[in-house]
Image (cartoon, rainbow, N blue to C red; front, side, top):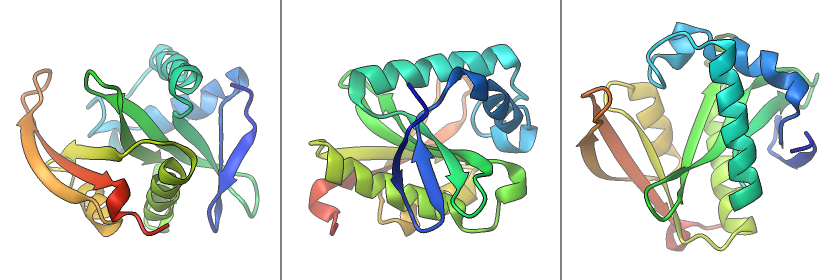
Length: 175
């Protein structure tokens, strides 16, 4: 990945990552409030490197990843949003995380809409998943607000916690 901007929303720029941006990933995921519903712990620099390696692999293999988010107005790093892969068919899984200082500004919803639209505009995928721990009410609210439809819950094996799954299909998209 080369860090080039790929697309924009009203206030955000979505780009790939460069190795020198490891500190941003670390700063984002080293906050327990941000990582509470991801890994449940403050993540290390090594965890950040694993994430970046996974995102680079996903981008090379699938053409998508968890993109770097910067604010258009000043270029400041605000978080990440994009797609991971889920299941044996590597179905796109929509996800986002923002620096805690950027919460409450509408960036997560704006990013979720932008990546949803990007997926259907730029790829031939027929649907994507969005899921969150059932206790993560703000994330579930965002998934529903962008038109994703509840499908089911599952108990995550690693944590024993309930996950709430949502789906969005190409047929639902009005882009």
